[in-house]
Length: 241
Image 1 (cartoon, rainbow, N blue to C red):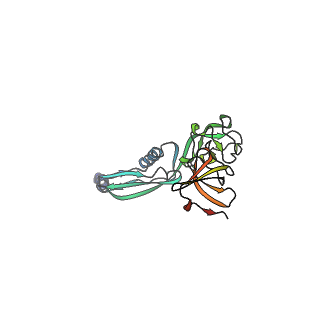
Image 2 (image 1 turned 180 degrees about the vertical axis):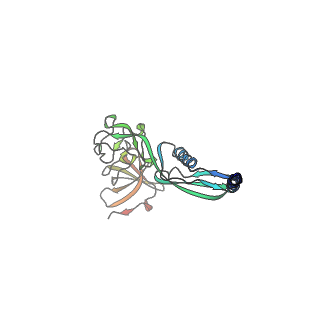
Image 3 (image 1 turned 90 degrees about the vertical axis):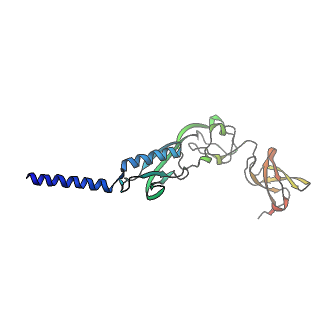
């Protein structure tokens, strides 16, 4: 009986030795999951909730000098996405594991407290600031409160909706149907005429205008006082269909 127990102990020690010999580097699935969450939260750089959608398997390697890092871009880490875990030896990637994640991004945004009609000038009475899920919105679409007050509405904004940059225009812009002064410069020759804006635009944006009394459509840059500047007449003429 003593001999049997002794042999069993030797066998267990041999198995342990073999496991150590063949698995020098080891990363547990839980450790990797926490790394993915930390990396994603840091990369998004905002108020975010990160959910790892599957169990990550333990990762073992025969080599001892294995490093691991997560990869993914801020732009891609929104909604349903993936974070890649790359395992490298001396700078060479030897294994890559894709981890599905769900990322919800939150931000303090302006939310309409009443329906805001087209042409209205937005004031503090029109909105409140709330923490909302903005995963479906690009950062460029979201407004700070200081950017919002005094802007005008491009189209009707329903009550309860997030007010976005594409829904408003700066005061001093022009609306579709507004009368514009068209200034065309060709070399030293400057021509001034009137026209009608064919779309909403803010100062500095390109806007198409129809010249007064004709069907000629021109494209130029909107400047102050509803002035549309056109630098090259030959490249901007077109006929309205």
